[in-house]
Image 1 (tube, rainbow, N blue to C red):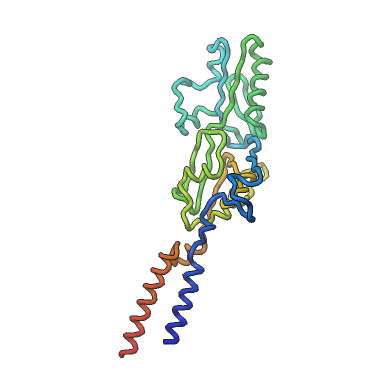
Image 2 (tube, helix red, strand yellow; image 1 turned 180 degrees about the horizontal axis):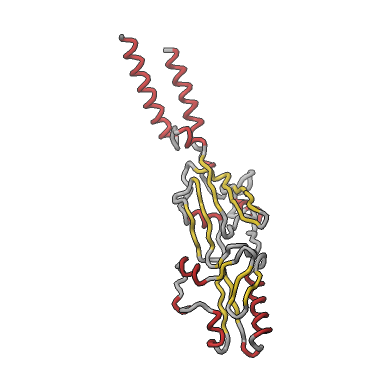
Length: 266
């Protein structure tokens, strides 16, 4: 019976090590022994203005007192634009080419690489007033990204690409739109793969820590890739909770016991 006892002890150790701790599954915990306030240390959200990159798509609208004079600058059928249609936004938008330019009717090429949408609005408005209109035309230009596109892979409900028609999306909203991170996903080390003019960089977020809201990567940007790594418990396959692990171990012990009894009777 001694080998059986050793086996049971060994399997019990596996159960304890294979269970996923509760603290690894809860978002936005107040750590380091802080008091349980709603938000510790007066956390403030940080978001830098997004600067346009190559392959971004811009929606540009120009308004004036005489709307007919600026109709060529606006997409055809602008009144019927379906804001939820990524395809329509793609075909009606202005794509930033490899040189950082967009090509606008009557204005030609305008470089927008590295500018914010507010800066591009001012550039287009100044160019229109300089070349085609007077101040009395009351030109009004709006520039927006044609949706915020990102990709989520790994341990999420529905891996794939998403386009959200909003200007501000945090990491929790982004994940919610591709399905919740399952228990087997590593919430303590979520990777953000971000595009930069110099190339790609990987940033790390701990979603279980409330201080994640202080991170400069808390808000995602267009073309971000979110990767959620699996926990080692998934690779072990022993169960996500103590109950499931015990059930697995009980099945193994029962099988081994039956096998041992059969061999001892031979």
